[in-house]
Image (cartoon, rainbow, N blue to C red; front, side, top):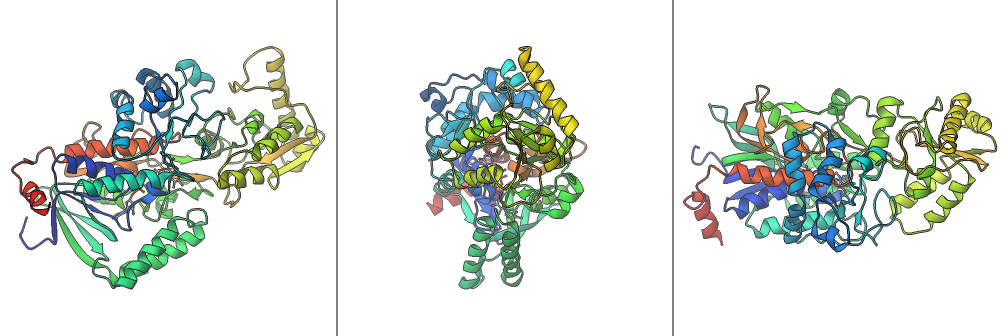
Length: 545
Ligand SMILES: Cc1cc2nc3c(=O)[nH]c(=O)nc-3n(C[C@H](O)[C@H](O)[C@H](O)COP(=O)(O)OP(=O)(O)OC[C@H]3O[C@@H](n4cnc5c(N)ncnc54)[C@H](O)[C@@H]3O)c2cc1C
């Protein structure tokens, strides 16, 4: 490392200060390493904008307080059906075995959880409940394979509580001595002649005039929320923030003695990458921030890292709340059933996009409609009320016969009639529902309704999407791997910049849980070669206290 050539030095340089970056930084700093974190904006990323749900089980303290029994084995059996080969069986077992400890670790960082169990099937519990069935645990084959348990641990706080979770992690990181450099964007990695990653070249707003930093901060904050719900507004605000970076950003070189850890989120905000890796996922609401432009993944690829699961996208098509809608039948334009309507929203979205051109209608009768209307008056968050209102009004056509109804919605009447007949025949014979739904009741009280659940840009009923693939990492250490299976020396990745537990399929809370799991793993391993006690970094930390 040439003296004077760098503006900053640290043992570990973490790119991105969301949940994964914060977890990694805390782990490394707590072990005595000198850690610098860089964030293009002010930190938080999608983690801060999120619902703050962490998927955890195996008998967490919160589950036990709520009177729920769970075991790592049941959690493993359920998740192995959900996530398939996203990670090895050994890694998934470790993830489940360490899950209860993860909640304890988060609580120790100051993240509040609560043992209030949600009684209803919902996409997200209201402010009264903080533990819920956040996946498809109670659905047909899943419930047969593993005893269902509620594992969605939502950080306690009003509204979407990702900020509560993130703020606690960010505070803890700072308390641990982590040096955070906001408004600093990593542009390229510095490699030595042996291909080892030794630092990061950045552009920083640190020396920009106060007004420019303030404007950049405000623009990026509003580009995230409300820009998240109105993407065109988000993009317009982000363009202005990017112009400030171009005008006022100055180069900064940061040296990393032990390594660089990429935790810069996914790529859902990068239209070109979305088109080339996941062309089928159009018309959705990008679930992330402008920082999800794939830059973390691309930095890793340029240093020799390989990627996987880049075509895997989680597209959320929730038909609840209101929970009565689960009793409806979701059909495609041929009138054929799409999937078990009680599955988690991402499983419904996946079935619609991959097998039914993203188009589907929910068939209900007057009994279900009345129950749904009653439920809409119960506790729910604003975006759930908006969705419920949209589904029961604008998106709905109604008629007294199935034939007339199909004609109004523009779907095949013969197919619809055949689907309803098959469903009723199974019920009459006491057989399971043809698609395995456990909540099965006759749909025979006219007038009938078909609710259009098709995926397209739609403010009232958006289809949020997030990318799941990224850099391939060594599952024991988080080190970035090459195509030939060797490591890129000095380079680590975590969270949505990397392949992880949720990279095939997501249920609520699994991304944040993976961010904490993979972040802590990479943060701990990235510094194992340092002789912390005797190192320069330790001296620096002791001096700066
Ligand atoms: C509205 C919403 C609700 C969600 N709800 C949940 C939920 O309840 N549970 C769940 O598990 N998942 C949820 N998700 C998904 C989850 O939040 C994300 O997948 C997860 O937070 C990703 O974390 P991360 O640390 O990988 O990335 P992020 O949290 O996005 O952090 C990445 C950081 O890197 C920074 N960055 C990017 N590029 C650079 C660069 N070149 N240089 C420097 N910094 C850079 C960004 O500014 C950002 O701060 C939700 C997402 C959204 C948007």
